[in-house]
Image 1 (cartoon, rainbow, N blue to C red):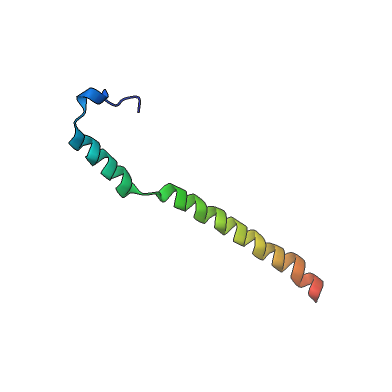
Image 2 (cartoon, one colour):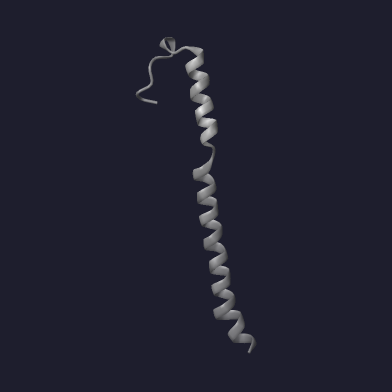
Length: 58
């Protein structure tokens, strides 16, 4: 990071706490993005099914 103190000034406990906080935060952004993309694909599939396949079959 641009605002991080130099490595020689940081102690090991601070590093461990920072890493633990990052791990606790988890990949929530990536999971949210994957869920949104999946919802879009499923919505497109249902729309295609309802407006293309069903009218041809009847």
